[in-house]
Length: 125
Length: 125
DNA sequence: TGTTTTATTGCGAATAAGTTGCAATAATAC
DNA sequence: GTATTATTGCAACTTATTCGCAATAAAACA
Ligand SMILES: [Mn+2]
Ligand SMILES: [Mn+2]
Ligand SMILES: [Zn+2]
Ligand SMILES: [Zn+2]
Image (tube, rainbow over all chains, first blue to last red; front, side, top):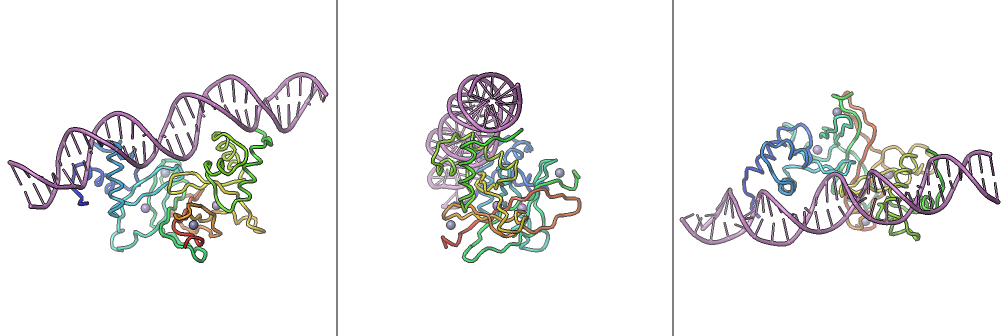
């Protein structure tokens, strides 16, 4: 299943790269200068997830948001599980450079973490 | 907006009280012995949330799950923000007695936390 | 106990997010 | 240039949740 380069893919990727925020399909479609079909955007995003180029966050609004997995400058693995913050005022979601720390009962095996803090961000407070 | 006692309300509450898991509207409807309309179940649950009898968890499947806010035995405020665990094998969600610890950048104000760990639970591993 | 008030319910329709099948298009390899 | 097949657009579909509205029934009250 070899990947191909397409204008769509490039456009979505560039948008995510230039955005400080995690974006929903909806937001991506609106912010793109070219028109891309909804289903296509989802497919591109899901492919990015499979390829670990992007990670998906599900917020308490039940919607999916996507953000680049940036290796914050040098550290190759800051990408681990980190908190996300959703501002109720400006309705934006961003990755926090705050690792998720937890322990689980015996016999539990954690594969993934989806952690979203909600409140007011610095810009809005 | 005074609350009234109804069979529906009691039934849903009892089910949640007796369940070790967080339940979706779907699961509640299925597990109830009496028939209750979908919309009604949601309304009952949302009222419980308003009254802090129940808390809502949104999992990465985008669905809402509801669990009793039990004051784990004595401690009046174990109810705080805690992790939840979703087992991909038995597809169940439970509250973990594990508090969510985090720090946020200056100027950020956290009002709520929705944290779900995903993997395999003890029963399934 | 009968009457009034209004919270709660059921129903059907609406909304919204995300997915899927299929045929057409277009990267990429040959 | 031609063939292969990943990608796209479109429309239809699924699933979760909400909403308007009229009917029902708790609870307060006379
Ligand atoms: Mn992130
Ligand atoms: Mn919980
Ligand atoms: Zn904000
Ligand atoms: Zn399990």
